[in-house]
Image (cartoon, rainbow, N blue to C red; front, side, top):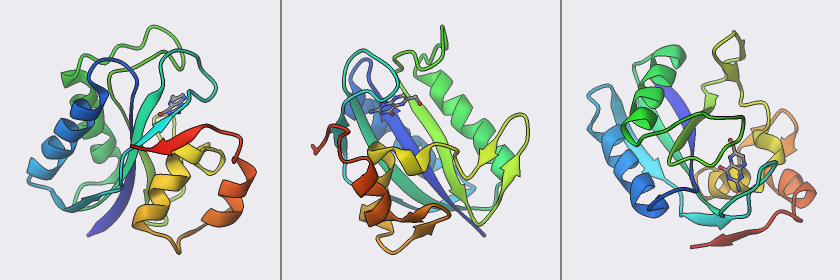
Amino acid sequence: MNIAYIGLGSNLGESRSILQQALVNLADHPSIHQLECSRFYRSSPVDSSGPDYVNAVARLETSLSSLALLHLLQEIENRYGRERPYINAPRTLDLDILLFNDEINHSAELTLPHPRMHQRAFVLLPLQDLAPDIVLAQGTLDTLLEQCKDQGIELL
Ligand SMILES: Nc1nc2c(c(=O)[nH]1)N=C(CO)CN2
């Protein structure tokens, strides 16, 4: 069984209920097990403008490959009317694979671990709820959170 961490984000529409519904969609999938989610956070947009985001991180076990999981996440994003008019545009639902076992992937479709997760408090703080002792290639969660403490984020 594979273990994946997924970043969830939304800053358009009913963000909290969209995230909750997306978690139900994931939990209902026959190849996804043991889904757990962090607390929800409100965060200021990083590298983009527009409304604040609601962010969370989920941990799940799956028999799917990383690419099959990516395609499932894209399909769920599309159910919530996700459009991609420009890079980092506001979005109803963003589902990113952050970590997939210890997989390192630099394919055209998927980069693992997620290339910017270590610089984003909206990923690191919810990840800390689920896996406080996890150590990324760039350092511990405490060390990395210290480096992005200027990013606005609060517990919902
Ligand atoms: N706070 C916050 N900022 C972002 C987010 C996000 O989920 N939360 N997602 C982005 C595109 O992936 C760009 N900026």
